[in-house]
Image 1 (tube, rainbow, N blue to C red):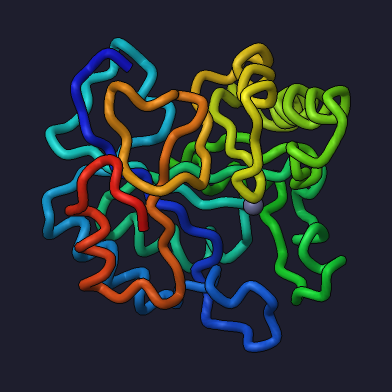
Image 2 (image 1 turned 90 degrees about the horizontal axis):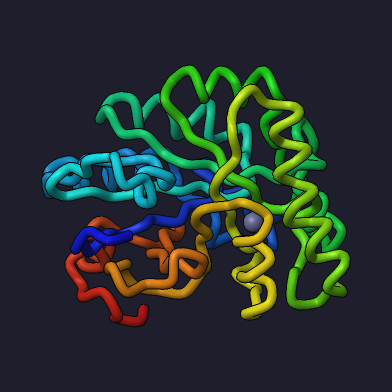
Length: 240
Ligand SMILES: [Zn+2]
């Protein structure tokens, strides 16, 4: 990351109308709101780039780059978000839970959340063909701060191996489930061969940001258009 830049990375989960029985209601951005947010992004002059273009020294970034990320790999990404992204010619990066391709958000349902479907391999390939990039979100959506070092390595390295076995492209980016990490965990991500990793720390990214702890702007159900625009205009180290 040698180039001088200030890059916002947006964090989404579900683009879907709210399920009132959900225990994580903030994660639901309605398709109508998502469409408005993408219109604002476009009107502000942003060009969306895949996350991995930030480390590639050969890649020439647009004047005003933004990275749009989606955690977990829900089917509603394919059905609701992707058609809107395509309208604005925006690409995005989706983080997959390697043991749950075609499965569900088992890590949430075991705590009483509603079940949401995750993309299977054909759906991932369909999104890929439309320009979507993919990264790893571990094997089982593991809390990497809570598990042993051996298990953390298994989740980090094993998910790269599994995804690259099931999918015909390289997995070079990573996202910490729940944003939970330690310096040791960040080092494992680097050693496993990933080039960049997203945290849930808030703010934008500059050339000084640790590429294995990239900051993101959390977009939630209640992120109205003015709040969305304000989050993008804030300085690189601003908190919420
Ligand atoms: Zn997640």
